[in-house]
Amino acid sequence: MKLYRWVAVLLLLVGINAAAQSVLRVEVSGLNDVSGELHISVYDNEEAWLGDDKAAALAVDIDAAREGELVIAELLLAPGDYAVSIFYDKNGNGKLDTNFIGIPKEPVALSNNAKPSFGPPKYEDALFTLTEAGLTQQIAIESI
Image (tube, rainbow, N blue to C red; front, side, top):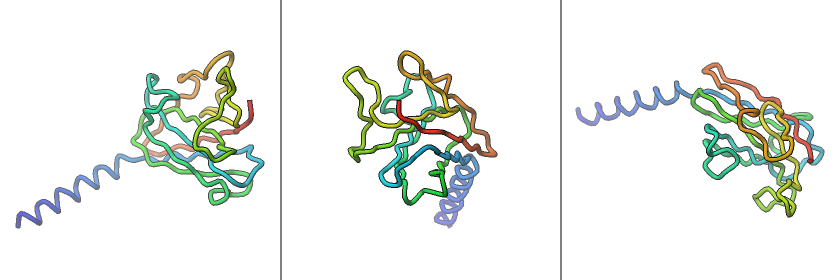
C-alpha cells in the first residue's frame, strides 16, 4: 500500500512539473552553412547574462534541425522572463571565438534581435516573457 502512495505522489509531482513547462521555440535565420552547431544559451537573470550560469543550454546540429531556411530548436522552460544568446560554432571547438578585444569572430545573435552598441549586449534588450502558452523567438544570426 505504501508503494502505491509513493507512486501516486511521484505521478502527481511529475504532472505538476509537466504542467509548469512552456515551449520556447527558437527559429534562427541567416545561416549560409548547413553543417556545424548552434549553441543556444538561455538566461533568467541579469547577473548570469552571457556567463556560465545558464537557465538552459542546447547545442543544435544545424543539418538535423534545418527546415528550409530556418534552423529550429525547442526548449521546455518554466514560464518567466528570459534572454537568449546564440552563436554559430564554425570551427567546432564548443566555444565562441573572439578577437583580442573580445569581439566575436563567429556569427552571433540575441533574442528580440537585439543589437549591441559599443560593448557587450544588454540583458534588458534581449529580455522577453515566456507565458504558459509558449513563445516563438525569430532570430536572425549574423557576423559582427
